[in-house]
Image (cartoon, rainbow, N blue to C red; front, side):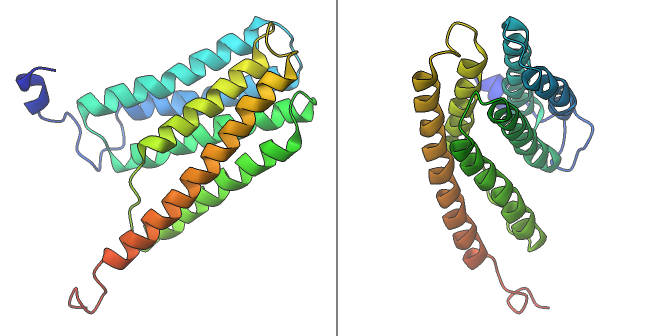
Length: 198
């Protein structure tokens, strides 16, 4: 990237709500119910796979847009929320039709939902927990597991899908522990109300 591009001012400030990146994130959320219905309907063809790829592509797209037009607090909340809704919703639909075991799906869902609550609680205390690169890797591996479970040539090979899914479970919980540590350190580093003068 050129020096001029790096120094280009952000189009949107951190408090902006209506941004192109947020629009892409909301589009991902809006498309998720349709994807879940398609998966739950046990359509053994390429349609759910293609829709899942398109939905996943919006994740990369909104991140790309946000980096160039300015990241926002609303985007920092909506983007991981959309990721969790897509992943947990589709995994549950696959488990409900016995394409995946409920055990790894439940482990991923428990971590994702508990981390969402944890971030909300810490946010109300004024503690921000920045995203980790490892969490993006986790989301990618979760997405790969879903795409493998939806791809007609691969879906019947349950051992392959299960191996990738369990890798996603491991990364999901490892990053969860990392975030708990990040939250504790951020809370300790935050000045107390007495230090802030009231």
